[in-house]
Image (tube, rainbow, N blue to C red):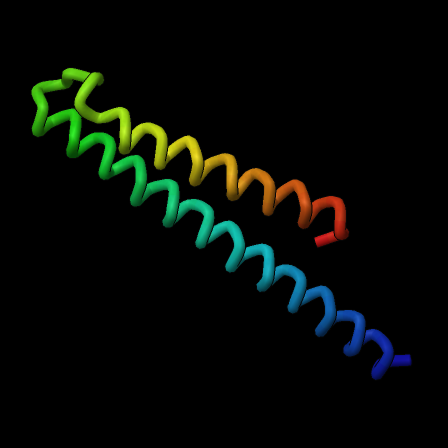
Length: 77
């Protein structure tokens, strides 16, 4: 009985570690794109027209990770 609990615990721990890794990658990549957008805004004196490329990269990054998160939830992760 104790051995069965250990196996279940190991599986749950690996799922938690997978989720933690996923969230770390999610926030790191969004932070990177957000910082690039902010830096662009500073360089171009907050004129949004010049930073559209960075804004689009942030939006695409966010869409990508949201798709991954939703797929993971659907798969039970």
